[in-house]
Length: 239
Ligand code: URA
Image (cartoon, rainbow, N blue to C red; front, side, top):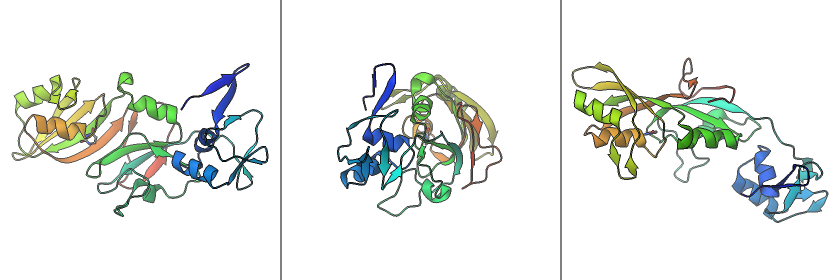
């Protein structure tokens, strides 16, 4: 979405963006509110999501209540297996929003964590922060504990470390530590600096080992430490 600045750095944003940045709901919801006539700018009904708003001068209301920019909020959630990261699900599966309840602030997950994977998920209303964490250029490390279905050879470990070929290209080198072998399974810790779809599962599969259990334990400086599955706590934004 383009963002403009007029005159001396006066922030001008589209109405849709003003509403979603205010942390009241998603972009889709914002468009619906605008379309159904619940939003006014300086008292005038505006039904165009792309209407430009000057944040310093214009007064935006939703259902007659003033809309103001919100403080950034960052949550660390221990997503249990079985939960999905979308808001609402046509199949009725539980979502992470069932766990955080109504905060009075609209937060969205930073990246996805697939239904079968548990562990750390950051939710925030700070889209810039979220984009930075997910942008591979910033190389924010994400660490996973992996239980593999057989004993992993040193060669397989080395392949994971060096990077493996996936259908969407080679992975970057990863930090891979063998934690323990039980004779039947291998437990490893893998740290990657990308965040492609189901990347860790695809990496272990590429060296011939299905992942049986996957838990994300850290994103940048943020760790699961002390959080129980299904619980969350607030944190600062630096990753
Ligand atoms: N699930 C995976 O398999 N890999 C990831 O990196 C994240 C979730």
